Amino acid sequence: MLKYILKRLLTSIPVLLIITMVIFGVVKSMPGDEVTAYLGPGTKATQEVKQRAREKLGLDKSVPEQYVFWMGRLLTGDLGTSFTLKKPVGEVIGTYVWNSFLLNIVSMVLGLALAIPVGIRQAVKKGTFTDNFWTVFSLLGISVPTFFFGMVLIYFVGMKVSWIPFSGMRDSVYANFGYPGGTMQEILDVMAHMLLPTIVLTFSNFATFSRYVRNSMVEVINQDYVRTARAKGLKEKTVIYKHAFKNAQIPLVTLLGLYIPSLFSGATILESVFVWPGIGRVLINAINQRDNSLTTACLVFSAVLMILGNLLSDICYSIVDPRVKVDG
Image (cartoon, rainbow, N blue to C red; front, side, top):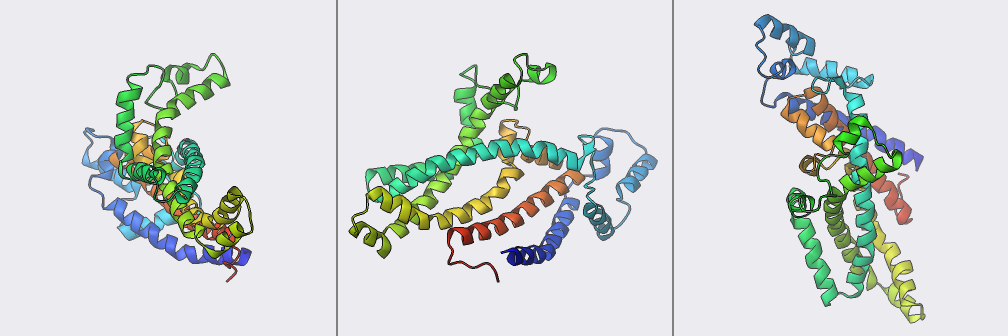
């Protein structure tokens, strides 16, 4: 296993190198003037000031030279400085990524907890009203954009129910002056702010996961070993959950491995809708404000997570199904 992991990590290096080249090139080709964004929109700077800013940002060099210089700093752990947030990029990512993780991990766990029993029930009741109802429900969850569902909840719930906040992560007054009730009051405040975006993400996750569980169980439930287990007189719950679902987990585990990077990379559009201070919203703001250092670092961070997610997916795949060998 260790040999396989090391081999995969080594083969990922050239892939990641190509990805960084593409990301750096795309960011540099984005419309807008990076110097103007750095100095501030509307700033009446002289050509001399702009030239000094250009030299400071390294924009006086060619794009390949800029990439080599940026990569050299990246390898030393220097991701640059965000001129919009006035902080090192590494500190920005380290701060906001956990806000995204909190929102996404809760939504994923809730989505899985609902999807597994529903998906199994659908497979067992294939073709019945129960199966058709949840199929339509899951297709609705997959089809409806999260930002649209989020805005619907904001209008019909957030604006109608006074105690449910729909913007930010904490109450602005308490965030600035402290919580008189201490840590517990802060936790309850964060939970209240999480409610609506969590409902949206849970609905989306449930729709995706339940479809995978249902389709996997339908394939497995008609296998010979399942019929044999029933013929031996085992209880239906034992047949379904111990024998059938164990083998139906494989596609779901693969999906979860690929889903893990999104726990840290954020729900970009949804975070913008609910003004949630996550890394996805930070990326959108960085792109809009031409903060190239922060934009590039966020995109590379997401690429690294995706590569690690693929590796983790393969490892989990081999654990769930011992027939799959990953030592080669």
